[in-house]
Length: 346
Image (tube, rainbow, N blue to C red):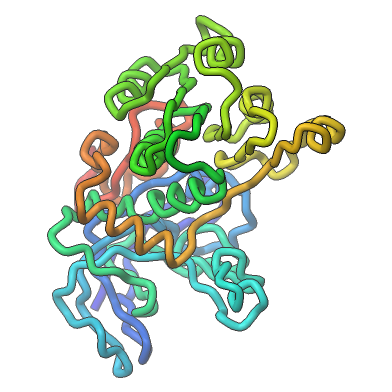
């Protein structure tokens, strides 16, 4: 049986090809992809970052229906509705043994960033280990495809070391920033300030419960947030630029945490004061990908409707429209673009 897949053939080059539909190995399931989000990681890989070997099929934010199971799979059957965790740990290195599967020394990713990338979900079908899918109940497939980025937000909230009543500043309110805002609200974090250039995104931040929203083109977010809220327990940068990381760090209270969530350029550098870090006990943390635990929790949040997924999805596109979607992402047009395999270009 054949299928269509959007194949990255070289840096900046992607084409829809007809390929053999995958068959399950003994511990695998094959999922008919119903929806797959387009992520900034896909954008970076498409443009030559993160060292992907081509040809390869990207796409790692996905959901769909199980259509085939391997001989050793007992817990799933054809017809099951699932979301896919794209992180495939080796389960043998020290990081895996301590539960940090996202930091696996031999990390393999289904269509995402990793030491090794295997074909992902910008395709009509994808093969994954049965241990990497979670049942989604009656959650719409497009919403369930947000489980992977939402899991990154759950993990990021853990890394920010915040709880009920802690103040947080978010720099950036794109799709991830807005999901992270909702994740923090679910934890009782308050107050939450958001700095964002785009008016529509600022409006959504208000809708999702931000206590203070700042337009950095009109006012200095550092001064405004410090005046209105004060130094915050955690500042989270969700853009991936040195200038905005420095902004976030300037808002962090003594004893607090600056969290780098956005994906910086691999060769980016910045200056920090080691004395201030020492004397004021300010932590600088990174947050990368997701854990199996955070993925399970993300699916639970979606199944119990604790996340407004509908407001985040602004485009539904076919496989052939992915490159132009990257262009729109670069211009910050809309929010989450959702690939629906089989859909014509929109």
